[in-house]
Length: 120
Image 1 (cartoon, rainbow, N blue to C red):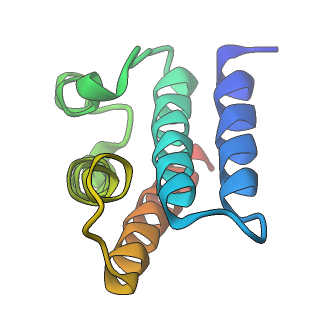
Image 2 (cartoon, one colour):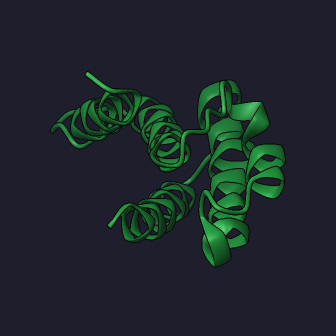
């Protein structure tokens, strides 16, 4: 299995688990974050790059514009919202609302849409 295939498999596994009935909001947000990260790293792998860890996403997207081209800034902003705002509320805090959950899902869907476009 290539690195690209491995990242895509991880993305699908985390997303599918997040979408299972009965998934807790906390678990769902964490799994969507992981799915988003692996999808971004799949885009990097398509071009022979590797991000290595989620803290490096912005730096690697800026350093290697070929990864997402004109989508990079939008992907980074949505991923940053997902990991910095929503993930922190759900995983480390306890003060989240249904509106926050909807925002986390929208942030994930933005990353997903833009990355899948880049992978075509």
